[in-house]
Image (tube, rainbow, N blue to C red; front, side, top):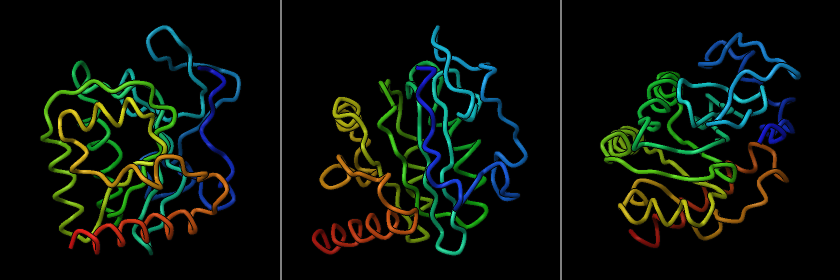
Length: 193
């Protein structure tokens, strides 16, 4: 796991540690000193610790003019033991929302497992962004994680599946990825509308 790095191909667009509006502003990173781990596995030092012992994040893009952010996740999303959704929402999502972000793209190919608890933080987040014409899209989550979300109806709070399940997102610029997902969301809303 220590070799899995957050995507760095957009660093010429955005760096969270250099963004005064980011919850990770002024963080300093090592390329060689490993301090965080998930259970007994060290993880790459470029991931941001949000206060969870199992879930780490990297903000790859925050576009305040367009009101969207792209977050890459790493680890185990464990609400049952650690209430990771509460930690993610309080430490990362709410500070971004306070800066005008209302559309969230969560990249989950490095989320290995999901363990559920209740849905109150998901519902709260969903209600808050929907009040602002926002959405939460899940991109490239593993199939068993998507199925675990669906088993307890958490999929009702996210845009997921279909063209978002195997999206070659690294081939896009942040703006192109946002436009593609926003178009996908709009088409889904029209077809259900």
